[in-house]
Amino acid sequence: MNAEPRHASLAVGKWFALTFAEQMGNIGSEVRRAVQWQEQDPQIFNRAIDNMLELIDMTILDARWRGRLKEILRVREFLCDAAFGEKTYGTLDDFDTYFLQFAIMARNGL
Image 1 (tube, one colour):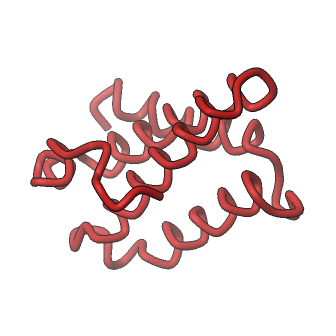
Image 2 (cartoon, one colour):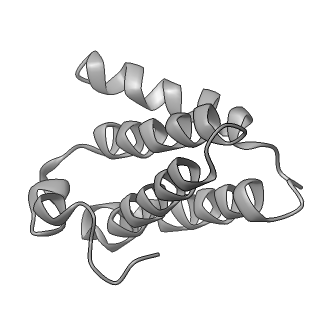
């Protein structure tokens, strides 16, 4: 991951105004992007993975989700395994389905 935040405007506070569903839905957008480019363009794939990890790390820092920290950290672990590991917990495509539910919740204002 880069030292400079790719999502600079989100890092300065906008991210922390989003709901949990909105944050997870945005992370899911990067997961979807990674899935789409995984076999086609390693550079775009790696950028999507960097973005995904940056967004999930900002979610981990969001004090509102302290009660969900175990869940968020586990999701990060699973995503890293899917992207870089043995795919013990599934593929990035499997997690795309997980994150889609959050995007639907965010769209519906839940």
